[in-house]
Length: 428
Image (cartoon, rainbow, N blue to C red; front, top):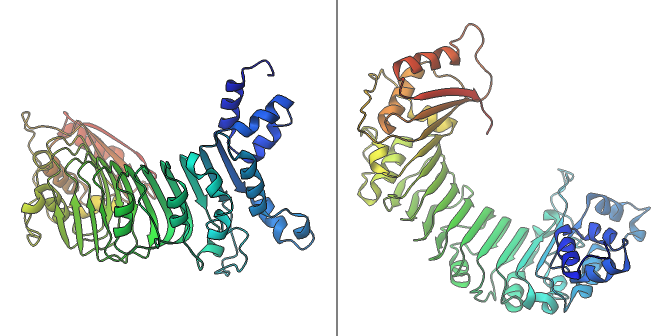
């Protein structure tokens, strides 16, 4: 190993990433030890074992504080080639009766802690990830975003998890292209500060972000977005002309505004929505829907855009292949599949060879509806005759006295031989 060029050794050690494993690598040779401080990426994680030792009376005094470990290691990497730094706490179960922890040894977004080491390495960082212990951070507001914007002018990717974040003093970060906020209390109720300070974002993940009232994402360069919203926001808006991939989970917003004309992949989970404001999704290629009520109205709104009549509850099913001329894949999760089922008998749809066909239709079912044929017919009326249909059955499979999926699929295959039918036990 000592015969390897130094650049190769540094590349190997940079891929080790975890600080504990990197420390073991230093024991291999003097060459490894010296080159280990030239790594470009490192992850410093407080393990469950370390956490337990720091709490046990017999080992507490013998356990070096985790924040001191970070201070020492980062100081050794200062003025080196470090580009990626991840700090966090290993996932573990805590006492469910404990709502908060008065200690601060794992409050890693604490401004006084981060200010001890970030100014020395901030300019060279391209990726920074910090994950708190929620029991310590949930009741402590942090202004770490302002500090990061001061020190990390070349940062490309930022990830913060399990923290209460203030946007006070946050400055523009024009280089930042990727942002992940997960299990966050954010003091930016309409996302105005985020839009203003991160104008170049291309990838955005907002997972379990609280503190929002009327959030609006307005990012001209955004390409992918995953947003899991709580039940609180009255309205949800995504205005992003270049967005191609959107995964949106919300509950019952009064208004859903999608100004995303370039969208190609949409995964939408919503219990119910009032008014839908949307551009026509003419480039949509893949659509996944999970809605427990009002699905047909939602489909009409997405299909017609601003021309949709949101009050026309009794309008017939929209022709999805016409509304979305580039749609190839449609997936309907259990609640959506059942909501689309018609309450009365529907005639068998007639196959029209000239009509454009979806490549694949996937239906998720918790159980076999009594009128499964009518349910399938209603789907075929909405999306034509796909090249293939996959039925994924969740929950318990039918017993011997109930109609089997095999027999139903056989009947469908006989009725619609131009469609490839299959089914399987599904998982969500």
